[in-house]
Image 1: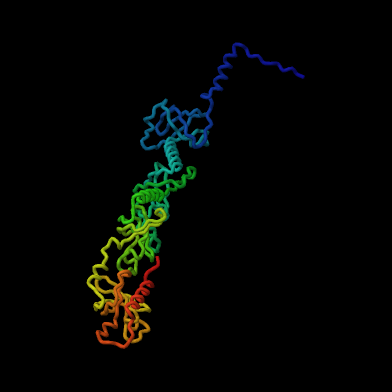
Image 2: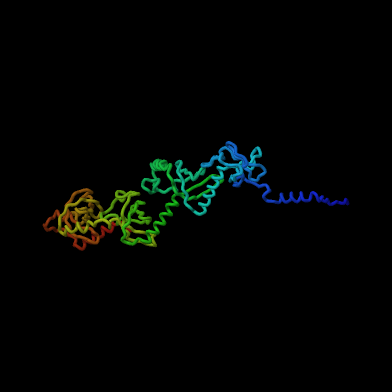
Length: 415
């Protein structure tokens, strides 16, 4: 076997090798491994028109040039050689082997970091509307960073004239017009999706307004009690009443609580977005269900109107509705009454429509007054008969009141 001789370093070279080893092992002298997207601090080694040369401790010095120098408030020619500068790595090595750096993207990357933090903490960010399309709004969050707010994530009051989301043939064109009118406005929103690589930011204004509404609702619930009067906005219309949002607390005004008068068409009285004062008449399940009243804030016409009438009076009226069991009549002062089929004629009546129709002006006699049901028992035939006796059988007062109550029960909508 060949004998390997150990090489001996001459004493005069040992100090040189020691210095070299120390230089190599010093982390300050080691080359950096850079990747696209890194943000590093370097030293400016040269300043030229339209270009900065920066040493970041890489195998070659980096170049910041062209649009990568363009940042609001930053003048490349004011930078001094030897000055420290934070730069973004665009390419560790281009086709020419050059390290490409950016000052512009450093600012942009800083903004992305802030956006990522805002999403993580569910913070509110402010955006400026720059464009609109059929789907929503394009907003600017900072220099060269844009986001998108879908129409469904905008507060309804911005988009719909009524302040309530609606559908229909003409709605799309109206919505687009409203969206275009928002260009230039500032909107507070929360980030619901963020992807830096795809340059994608999706935001929601609704998350901000809903959180505000919930906070307002909770505050209202802590203070409100039955009998309080609140100012609200109609948020929905239904056959059985209207929904009202008052101080963040949404509740129902049932059909029976809309007016002292009989309401045939809710839509004729209110539209979504209308403002209205309501009285709190019930709070249930910790505020999950709230009952409001409009009519209790209005003067009750019954007490005043009925004070001028008594049983036996003959009064003028108008037929409001014809039903199989009789006809409903409106008399002066906003009073309603029923002419039962048995009180329409002294002859046999099979169909009340054969005797009267809606809109007919009639004279009726008051047979009974029901304060509980706020209705009158009326008669057509009693007016025709006058005071002359008739052989036809008449209902007793008790029978007539029962007939009126039964008829009313059929007309009153279920809760």
